[in-house]
Length: 113
Length: 113
DNA sequence: CTATCATATTCCCATATCGGCATGCGTCAA
DNA sequence: TTGACGCATGCCGATATGGGAATATGATAG
Image (cartoon, rainbow over all chains, first blue to last red):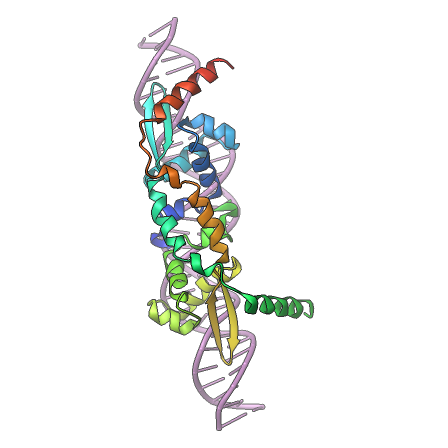
């Protein structure tokens, strides 16, 4: 049971660095598959597969134009992610002085091994 | 080459629903492992494993108190995630009609190559 | 030292994932 | 129709993952 029910939601989709790159590129506008593949230095099948995942979670849309398939960004699915992460906003500015000292201790402990 | 370099970054860590639940719980304060496991309805080893991942990407810290190990939130690693997702903020309410114009430009650019 | 409690780790299984390669399919031009 | 082009899919291999069960490790009490 790998990665369980995780699959097929936006969180999972953006866990992949290459998929994040694809999304970032698509902010500039629609693009055909081969274009994306070339620009990101990945194979055409590779690009297609990542795009499939992104499509399944609704982060991109496809539109057929002649022989080409133009992929476009649909960022709406990122909003819940943004909100979830935003729920921690007030915590990442907290003082972690205690933590820092802990880290120091840890490093020392390591060197002593 | 499975899942490549994805592993061990915050994006991957929060791709797991149970890990998100753990993080959410930890906003209320530090907690021992068994507590978390029970509250989230998972086994103790299960909780320990997820906590290990969270620790490795720096989203939680541990502190030994007697026999217990108290896990606490360290949300700093979520900031980059929030920022990355935030980079799409202006897109998730946009109308998708505009996309067509870009396509035209692209076609022209191609023909000129 | 020993027993015990709280956690971490290991092993195993089933499955999911990514990448590469080959191939299938749809569209368009001739 | 036949090619050619653009893309999707299928299959394979290597690996990573989550869950369960059993066990190891660490700290503390007695």
